[in-house]
Image (tube, rainbow, N blue to C red; front, side):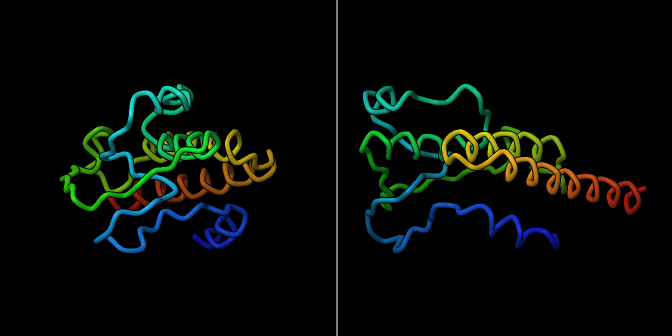
Amino acid sequence: MLLWPFLKSIYRPKSDIVDNTDCEQKVYRLIGAFFVVNLKNFNAVGGFDENTFLYAEELILAERALNRGYYMYYIPDVNVIHENGYTTNSKTKAFDVHQVRIRLKSDLYYYRKYRHYSIVKIFLTNIIVNCYVCKKKLATLILHK
C-alpha cells in the first residue's frame, strides 16, 4: 500500500465522476454493470476488444468512442441492482488473487494499447501489484489457519 501514491502518480486516469446524479450528462465512461448501446455505433467503434475479459472493457469502449467522435451519457432515470462479484464468484471471498490478476492484465493492456503508457510503467506496475498480491496471500495464510 505504500506504493499506491507512486502508482497514482504515474497513471493519469480519466475522470468517471458524475457531477450531478439528478441530470443527464456526458461522461468519459460508463460502468459495465449496466449500460445500453446503439448497435450501429458499437460496431463502428469495433465492439469489445477480445484481449480483455471482465475488466477494462468500459475504458476501452470509452477510448474507442472518443476516437470516433462518439460520447457516452449518464441518464439518471434508470435504476439497476447489480450483484457485485457474481460473475467472478468472488462475492464471498475477502481477497481473490485470480480476480486481481485478471483485472491487472486487462488494466495494463488498456494503459499500454489505448493510453500508450511506456513498457517501463507497465513493468513497474506489474511488479508492485504482484508484490502486493503475495503480501495479501501470505497474510491470509498466516491469519486464517
